Length: 341
Image (cartoon, rainbow, N blue to C red; front, side, top):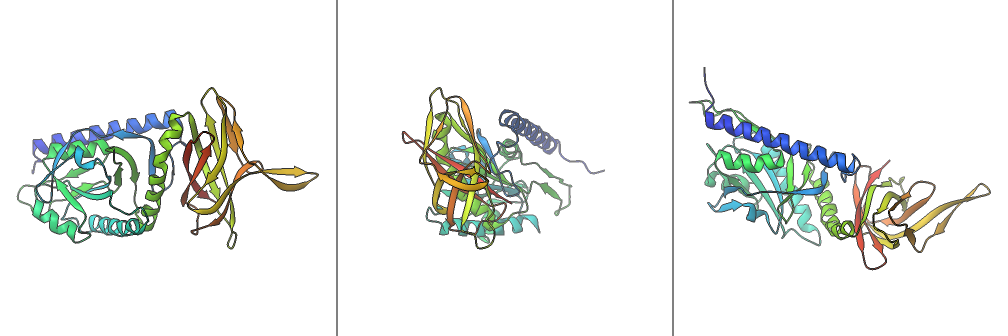
C-alpha cells in the first residue's frame, strides 16, 4: 500500500486548520454585519467589509527571487493556486485572468499597480524555470511562485485556499486537488476579496474597477457614516433613467447632510423623493438630505431615491457600479450598487 509522506500529511492538516479558521473569521464578519453587509454578494465576487491582514510567509518566484509579504505591498494582487501539470482548470483560469488584465490595462487607471500571481502547490515538479515558461505563455507580466510545503500552506491557509497533493512514490503524474477560486489582496497586503468560479474576464475586470473606487470609502466609515443593501433596478430596453436605493446609517452624535452624489457610470446623479398627491405620482428634487444623529435613513421604492441618468455602459442584473455620496464638510463615501431586476 502506497503511503503519503508524513511531512505532506502535516502540511494538508495545517492548510485544513487554517481554512477552518478563515471560515470562522468570515462567520464572525457575517454575524457582525449580517448577510447583506458583504458587498456585491453575487456569483462574481465577495468583497469582505473588513479586509484581513496577511502575515509573514516566504516563497520563491520564477526568477529565484524571494516572494514574501512585502511582495504584496503596494500592489493589488490576484492570486490563484494550482500546478503546471494541470490540464484543464489552471490553463483555463490563467487565460481568463490574462484577458481580465488586458481589460484592466485599457482602463484610464491602468494596470501598473496590479500583479497576477500563480502559486504552485506542487513544488516537487514545478521548478522556477518551469514556472517562468508556464506563466509566460499566458502573460509575460504574470508571476509564478512556489516554495516548501510549510510556506505554501502558510499563505494558502490565510486565504482559505484548500489543496491536496496525492504524491505516489514512483508515479510522475500523481493527482493534485486545489481550490478554483481567485483571491485578491490589496496594496496593504490584506485579504480583500475572492472571485469564485466560474470566472469571466469582463466580469472580473468590472468588479475590480468597483473595488478600486470603493477604497475611498474608508474615510466615510471612520467618520461614522455607512451604507448597506445598495441596489439599482435594471432598466428596461431603451430607458435612460434608473433609480438607486440603499440604507444609510449615521453613527455619530451630530447630524450629517448628504449634499450631492455622482458616479463615473452615469452622466448625472440626483436626489429625489417620490410624492403622491390626490392619487397622482410625482417627483420632488432634493438639494440635500439630513441624516439624524445615531439614526438610519432608507432610500426605497416610493420614497427617497437616487435618480441616475444616461448610463455610460449597459447595466444588466448582476452588474455593479459605484456611486459617490458627498456630504457637507467634504466627506465622500463611495458605495457599490448592485443592479437587480
